[in-house]
Image 1 (tube, rainbow, N blue to C red):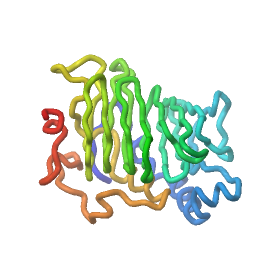
Image 2: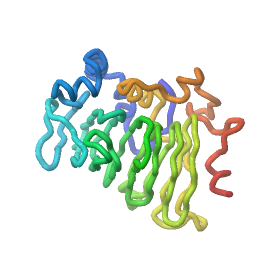
Image 3: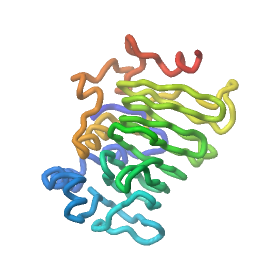
Length: 252
């Protein structure tokens, strides 16, 4: 497994893709035709549910479907993996999110995060956002990791694992173009005058993105390129020729 830096998360949380239950569920999901087939057959779009979660205030059961407009809350030790349209989501424990409706019932326009952490892969499209207490990310076709640190006054962390993302925090704005993990903090208070600051890759792995991408018949940028890039000792790209480091971007 790719090495990574953990901050307040357990090893098991970032190695969920190794669980036998998930591997069986993912294989079944793919074999049965993915989201389109699930929709046509009125089956659930939940790939795996571990532990307790609620959907719009009521206990979530694996045979139910997550729809745009729903609020999801996961409990301690719980996780939820589901697919809506061309996007796949892994909601980690102790998270509270709302999946807001886009142009159609099966298009997510906004992933609004109140607490917790979500790994997500998004098919190509426009007018989609992830909103946290301290930042907004306008996403196109991309794979990202988002986490809210409640013990840091809801300071938000966002990694553009691959793709193009329009980042905003306070009055700070930047466009992130990444093929291999470009991360940011959305600060609660300005740091050296900035609300959007560069970060290291933490609490998520290449493999998580690869498995979510597979659920929606996609590949990550590094899979398409057939490489994983320059490693900085934690399994993530620090600098690569032709790609700006976040510190350089924000210094412009």
